[in-house]
Image 1 (tube, rainbow, N blue to C red):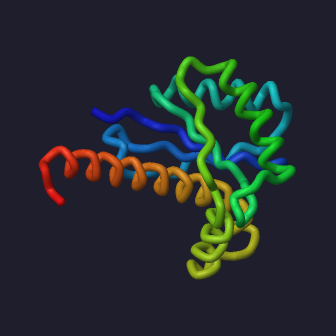
Image 2 (image 1 turned 90 degrees about the horizontal axis):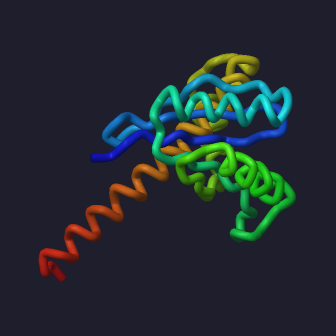
Length: 152
């Protein structure tokens, strides 16, 4: 049985958050955390893990389009290291290329105003990040199950 996964879209001003359903099929956006102090941000994420009984946290890794390290991905790596020390569950980096751009595209096409889009962008990006992770995991499970049946 799958368990809940918390997704974190780390930013310098805001942190987008999303949680999976208990079956690990769908992602739902949570509130966007306005950044204050790192210590407060870490405590807030710890509390969310506890509240939702998350068994894993994934954090968007903002690598370059070519997949290389960026200044932001180095900052995220430091954040992940500190978060991992706080939590008992695993914390994993997940490629977030294009999630913010896709979130902006979806929000623009929704017709909502600029200010509402700005507030929703990080939550939507975290939701897209988590959904891509959940879809990948489902595909891997299906591939593993298929390989055990002797199918070509």
